Length: 85
Picture 1: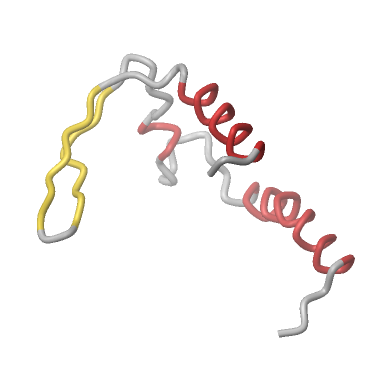
Picture 2: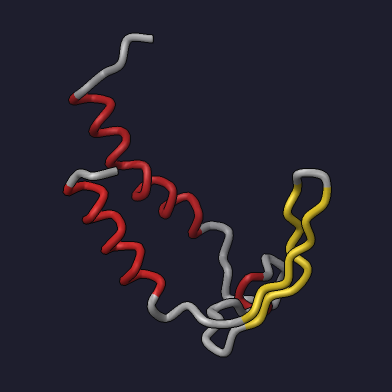
């Protein structure tokens, strides 16, 4: 906990959370946390965009290229530092 990496991590979290505002209602039940409601004036959620049904901007064909790009660092690391399981 008392190392420079922790300070850097906490600094990142504080900066990333600055725009976070709103209200959240939770239910606690038998060791579980259930989200009952959430709202924020700065919410980035848009049901029309999030929908994978016909009307949104989402094109399922885009996923293949996205996954290929996002997986590139892992593939490179696997080549440079292979693991022997």
